[in-house]
Image (cartoon, rainbow, N blue to C red; front, side, top):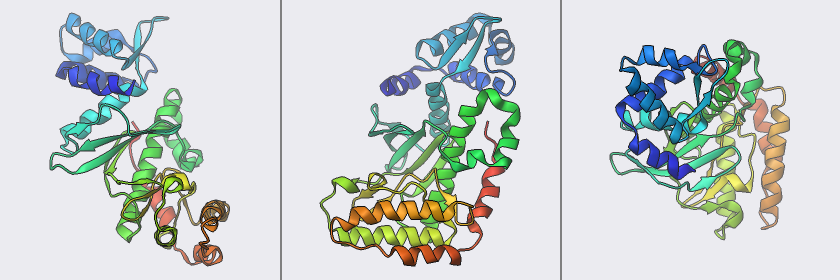
Length: 305
């Protein structure tokens, strides 16, 4: 299925991509955008627009509705195409692997290469997992787009992850370097390695890296929120990945999320005879500033469509 997205994108014309983008814009008012409006907006002959719509539908980038009118809705893979196209146009990525390097419930990850030859990971979010989707400012911002709730939540998750990666990376934590984001996609440096639970490297060294990253994030007001041996990649260092569910240290349930993270990681490393300074890290929450909450105001300023 993912191979179809990559191959399909390569076969789309400039006109096809314009029609797809127009339907995305039309979603501001419609769940299924009327075909006659797409024809009016596209400024191509009707038969050309219809041909593009048929091609997009064939590749699975559009879903059709026939009652009470003929309309079109972008699918998840249609959004994949638009995000990928934007990143290509902005010269953030040159090519993408035809198959994913990682598939989970909440995301799909591809390997890619930038125009300068730098290896990257392209993460397509598949679910709204950010805790901020329940926050009043976000709900207020998107309340008039109820028909696009899933799209907004997915884009919020990608944006939240990009922000967390940016702040933790800048502060010196061991995380993939964030490069760009668009819609529901985050582009970051590719980390060569294996998940912690499959690693046979020096666990003391890895634990030190993980504790350093947790401490760094806490210092700037961020708690990972979903830390486990499955989202720590062991390569030349121990890198903490998957940040869409982060919470600010001033969140009402901050201590709960931090205790859960620390309990999970501590239990894993304890099997290898390595102790994590849990109490010391818990004390760090009280010393952290309000930066995490300030990051939220930056996130809510973004356009989610």
